[in-house]
Image (cartoon, rainbow, N blue to C red; front, side, top):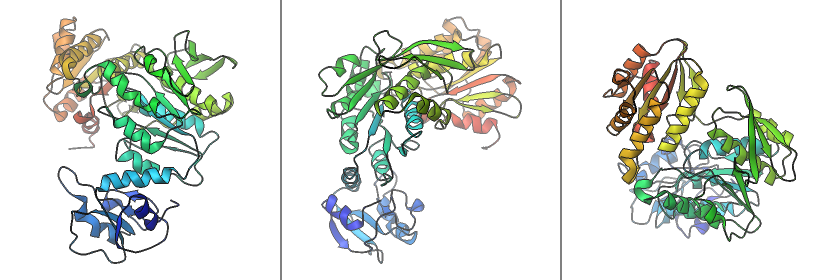
Length: 463
């Protein structure tokens, strides 16, 4: 980072309790165990602990500076550490990140949406990396804590940034966008996540569209043109709007798919460009939308179609997003365990059918959280889809997932093929009995269900 502790203190209007090293900060960290030489430690107060207890540990690990809350008294100041008192350490992190972001004139692509934002972020970053040194969101650093940390990882050599923006309520995307100052805003779709808080899909669309309101006139909005709830939010924007999808009205349009299930080519048309054939880097119709968004952003930043193709060939998807794991016994697991909603469950069941062909299919589905008033119907809907997926077995895990089982049974799935194990361990044991060589197993549920634990137990990696 081209920023030292004194500059941080000025950016956050902090009080310097103790001066220390004037050299540039290496990075910001919120976990004292990860602190190393040159880092700046931000102690955050959580549900179970307070990061202020670990300021000394961060200093011992090499951190050269830290924030402390004005209402917290340290027993002693760490020797040689630059200590800055602030009203709120999280707010100070955000202020420092925003100030640092202002040093950079570069394209920043903000990506949000109910489903597919991580995969879309990965595809866009892969495309841009064919020409530009691109920073992309790592892991789940997409919230009020993670996004500022990503901003502090910008470097003088960075030529573009692709930043994922998550949210659970109104105003959150607006706050993230105020920090990141995106030049391009991408919205993948509108699903059912966070209905418990936002009430309706229209409410979700309004919350996601806060990203578009933050775009500058010289920027661009890139939105799913097949989602009618998004289109009203593209009116009267100061910047150009690019839509993507299958609809004939889409700016970047999928005209069709060619090839076998395993290796599909997407035919992409856009006015002013020749017809483009691209291999779909990840299976599933839903990934066509993610690909179209990546093409739209690549062309906005003037990459050639050859560069777009080369970048996609080097795509490195984030873990637990439709990750295909082949086990020693010949069973293939679609590890899509990171999160779930009715929309993404439907896409995952479609993917299971597409990949498995004539092989045996087993779906292991967990609770979907934050669905609000549609909680029961959303789970039943997934059960009905599961019943139409020609499954060898359906395993449901969690209290709410009982509705999935009920929906499947009501839609005609044989009761003897529906299982409701009581734990991850019991689910893994059942899988070991049911799964045979060549079978495909889909693993999916909300983040709170930790469905990946079933795979770890199935593989014998966790006791």
